[in-house]
Length: 462
Ligand code: SF4
Ligand code: SF4
Image (cartoon, rainbow, N blue to C red):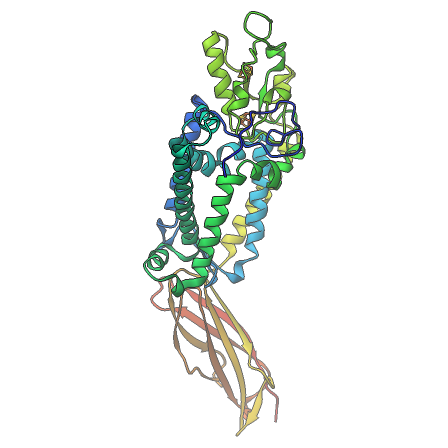
């Protein structure tokens, strides 16, 4: 099915929706300039980092591995298990506040420079599309020429390339959840041997392909909740991409007006969301800076100063005083510092090993053959990325005898062991409840890695 192409409708309510409510297919023109170069570099670094993270080892484990199946999570040398799920609250809320903070200061810097949707669409898929189908002008010409065989072949090639790219991305996504060696092993086996992982790869590939071949800017202008929240996150001092109306208007062809905007429409045709930035700040603007580069290029040719469209605040564009430090920035700073402090303390307080002792089910003690017996279960959890061996012992009054069937246990990485401990005391020596310390010392640790829990030996006089 050939793509319908419409030129931007300046009078539409939104850049990608026409006056009748139909979606317009946007084909942005190529743009070059300082921001385009900086964005290319940023995208390359982000994609490189994203590909590298599952390969990089920190303390013997991948830098990032979210092993949901085994409930093991490795994050830059820290190891978490399911019991640490409460820390996610700080991670999620911290990420949200960081985003609010960045938005208050830098507007939609995240959207234009670091959001995966933008990074992959502009950094990978759109580039491949241009490579195969040519520039905007080329594609518009092709579409007017009744879709010849060459156009159809190019279209097929583009879709095949998009599916291959989406497959590659899906496999790297999978490696964040099952590790690179496992993904590699799966690739060499039949999908029937790992149906669940195969299903996820198919699903992610289909979602990515649909998104990058068809949905595109609609993700930012319709679906993304962060995009919808801009009106409350931004204020007149937030940095935005804006048009200097005072300098540009009245617009018109060179020599006919006093404004600097020559109404060349170049800023509109390069916009990936199809909007006209000269209408003022719009929710559809993802601050990609393409219009800045496009207009700077026009200004250079006209020998006029750059910056008719530029990074500035609403106040800056209106030539009003600008403020960087303002109440919402102070508020977000305090909230972020509090969140970061609590998270750091929580992680530092978190121990690598945890030991609990609880009485076995039934009576708290038994009296049999002239002896009082207490039976307890020692539960030891290893939260480290590697296995650890422990020696168990008991310290208590001399009349208490301990029987530990398993005195030495190897606790697997992010695993746990249960060790039963039986304590006995001759009934005629019992003078009251007595404290007993259960100890677990990590084998070979220096200084000794020691865990201890004190419990009360319970009994009764004859
Ligand atoms: S690129 Fe600059 S000069 Fe051309 S229409 Fe846009 S704002 Fe006006
Ligand atoms: S208006 Fe400019 S900065 Fe905003 S999305 Fe369009 S091209 Fe990018």
